[in-house]
Amino acid sequence: MPLLKILHHPDPRLRTKATAVSTFDEALSEFARNLLTTMYAAPGIGLAATQVNVHKRVIVVDISEEKDQPHMLVNPVLEPYGDKIKGEEGCLSVPDIYDSVERFEYVKVSAQDVHGEPLQFTADGMLSICIQHECDHLEGKLFVDYLSSLKRGRISKALRERAK
Ligand code: NI
Image (cartoon, rainbow, N blue to C red; front, side, top):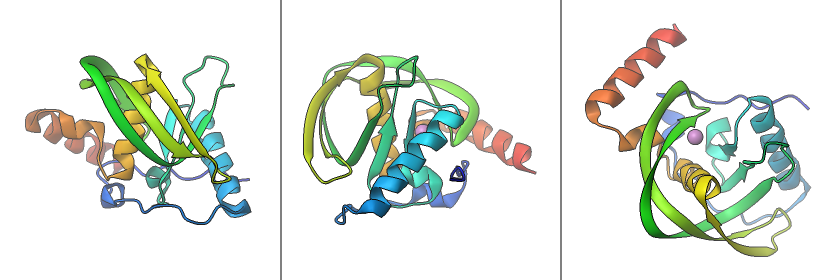
């Protein structure tokens, strides 16, 4: 199966708000697997459907070294809690740019699996940050939105020039 094409900032399609998934069929499973394969190939630790121009509420995440602990989350809903922590973030849609972003330390995740079965867990550290980052994509939001307008301007300019 061919890898999915990842959109790059400042592509306006990255600003689309994703809609809820209501049909849990083979096409959805296949899409989620393809999203995961595309993420591993990039390589990355998280990818949202929005980033491959599919505006459905699906994210995939795997922060393990061995790439053997995938989370495929459909219709994720987050309850972040705890202190705010700062971590260096990057994004497959904002290539080669890394900057410090504040996130909640913990997050309670409620979602469905690709078969529509409910699942719930809490995450901390890198997994918590990564899930918050991916869920932002479903709202059309990028990590660079948290940076100063000066930094954002520089990043957009650098990426536009590189795309030429
Ligand atoms: Ni991202």
